[in-house]
Length: 82
Image (cartoon, rainbow, N blue to C red; front, side, top):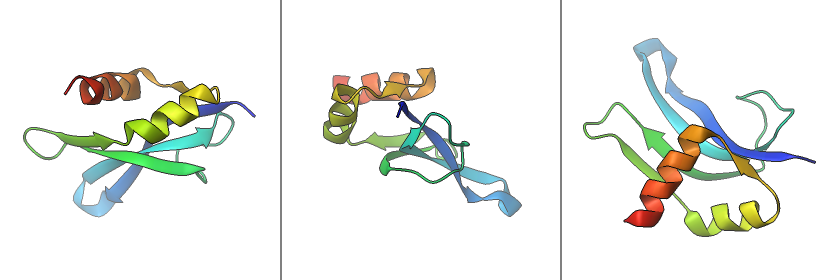
């Protein structure tokens, strides 16, 4: 099973206040499908945008062969730096 680390939309769509979860999900599942694990979040509505990724969990999934989307990789690298 090929696995990706990507973002899943969350929040209140009626108020157009979208947050994103950073999740581990099989590649063939839809963006908002069932996830294997939630490893972080990203909230662009705050200034500055807030985000958090559990790098230990992400590293475990990467060792198992998971790949990241470009956006998640960018947030992951920012988290690792500081």
